[in-house]
Every structure is written in structure tokens, then in C-alpha cells.
Image (cartoon, rainbow, N blue to C red):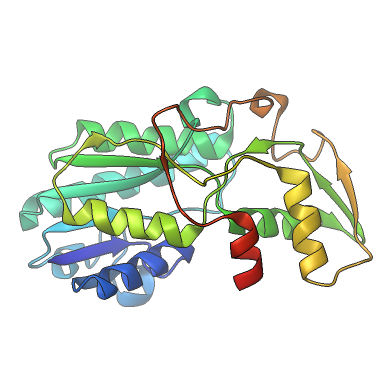
Length: 248
């Protein structure tokens, strides 16, 4: 199949492109670097010629709710309109487990908007909600580090390897639309601060001081407890955090 990946140069998008290639499909990368812009709509008609399915793995660095809603709303509408013109039969959205339980989070507000637009759109849809990636912990370490001090929210997660998410997106795109698919999570629950501690140890960083706190501004107490855990019928990906840490 000829399958396009919007955001195909990002972390999960790039892995999805490679997963599609391994499965024998013909992936098309949709990104500004390839001349296709989901915000302006430029280049989408050309990129989607002959495409049968689209995986939307786009993201934004915006944090404010109005900005994220504008980004995901505009991007999704433009993608769907171009897909309808091109005769694309399946639109796959990568979303986040628990996104509707934390609507005051700026990024989550945008993802909710993305889901709403996709479900109301003209192209049959699959929405795959995944838990936080293993890679996310290392990103947050970088974002919140101030000298040797790293302030992290004491989140309870069931994180998943980004590569496993990419495999699931590739498989979903090659199959029939599912509407809301089962949640996707890793095989084990993890303490976010402990994940960071293990990552720092693996990187040989002995100077960092971890401070568990809800005061870093990225995560609020509304994310405490089991809010970010998957539902009871979730599909569990195979890669453990220990195996990912060793490999990476």
C-alpha cells in the first residue's frame, strides 16, 4: 500500500515510515521539509496522489491551549480535505491515553481538538491512543533541568517504546478503519521520577539532583494517581523499559 505519514520526520513519524518500509509498503513523508505543509495546505494534493491511507503523527511545541487547538484543528482539517480530494480511504490519528481526563492541559486540549475534527471528518478514521513514550522521560529531563537540579512530577505511568507505537500505527494504517482503537501501553507501570533516575544512571550522569514536585509547570496534580494509565482492555506492547534503556 501507498501510505502517507504526516509528521514523518519526527520521532514516531520517522519510526512509522521505517515500520511501513519493513512491512513492504510504500511510505510517503508529509512534512515541510518535503514541500507538504499541513498548516497552509501547500503540497498536500501532490503528496497524496495514489495514497490509500494517512497516519497523522504531527505535533507542535506550543503549550498554550488556544495555540495547540489552532494547530491541530487547522492541520487535521487541511489533511482531511486533501485526503477527500485524493480518494484516501483511511485516516489514522496518534493520540494520548487519558487525553480527555486532563482537558486543562494545553497540549491535551489540542489533541482533543484533533480527535474531534478527525471523527467529524469525511474520511473513515482510526484513533490510536498511546501512553507516554520511554523517550519522553529523557526529553522532560532536558526541559526541566536547571543546572544540576531536575524537577519532575511524580507521575504514575505505563509508558511504551516509540518504536512499538510506530509498529502499531503502521499495522493500523494497513488495515480497515476501527474508530477508537484499544489503548496502547507498555507492559509495566513505572514511576516517572524513577525512570529519570535510571536514565541518568545509564548515561553516567552522577551530578543531577532529582526533585519530585508538581511545581515545574508542565504537569498538574490532576495527572496524579491512575489518570494516565491505560484502560483494562489496552493492548500491551512487548518492549520493557529495561530492554529499551539497555538498547538505547
